[in-house]
Length: 388
Image 1 (tube, rainbow, N blue to C red):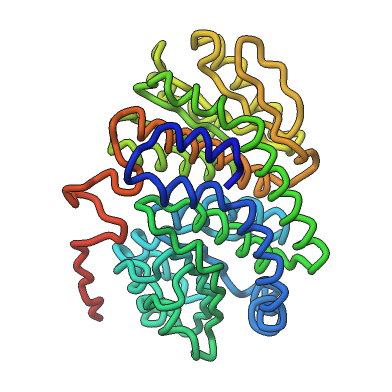
Image 2 (image 1 turned 135 degrees about the vertical axis):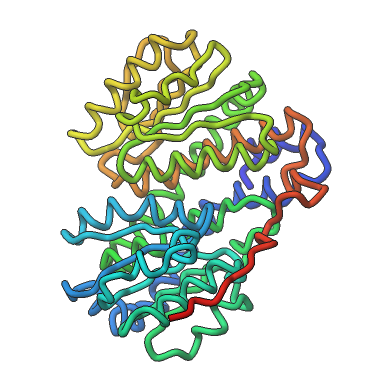
């Protein structure tokens, strides 16, 4: 944990926040570890995953629930562009509810399952329903828990590959933080065909940017969170729309719904959802590094600032922006980086806003729902058999 971040949080002296603070702050170090993890897994990825991704008859589906679904939402646009083929992000909750619709074509499929624990009922059921509905299905399990159901059940399966994240990413806190970013980065490398040189360079670039962000902006993030926004809006395009979804979920979870988020694409926000804005709203925009997409994001940023009081819009970008009246933050060292990497570093801002906001509204971030109405691993799900 960087000194600046640690000192700021320690000053709050809030019991029940230690895991969340540590797991947010450890992410740059975890990303550096991933370089070695990917090197150790390279032979299996090249033998089992790369040939499937190269097959044009194989449908690639990224799946998970909640935060794990947003890993897929973030990756799918970037992978589709890089691989020049469609990659779909479909939540496990949709697969379980309507498996015949999702698997209607009985097409050979690579099902990429993201799971912190690997024990969520829908995560397990989605893989089983794929086996039931499809003649040919292969699995890439990306998980943080080596003892979880998904990891153990698929460990020795011929058509399965298990990619385990560093042990510390099996977050002990209620909300997924380091589990989200590590699974996102590892799957990007595994599916995009990144070589060792690219993997190490990207891990170091992201980690260095994260370290600098915490050193330079932790106090600013705390100040934003303590302005007590009643509503918060996260916007982005393409992969950064997926990051926006995850950013909104974090503050909803950690404040137990006391701060209400809205998450959308930059262009989609105009079509009705813009109604959510009021003078107390805090808005955060992730600006794409793609020159074409960036124009639309900046157009929306200028429009947002015109609708909000000065200082209530935070613009996060890899290059300098000049949205008058907004807080323009350039994420350090990311010029030319993909939106996946931009999202990795940008989500640190959203996670830290959520952490401090949780404390500000009187919650304990490690367990915002002490009564058990919402749980770390979802409960109460009945998986009904698919017959016929």
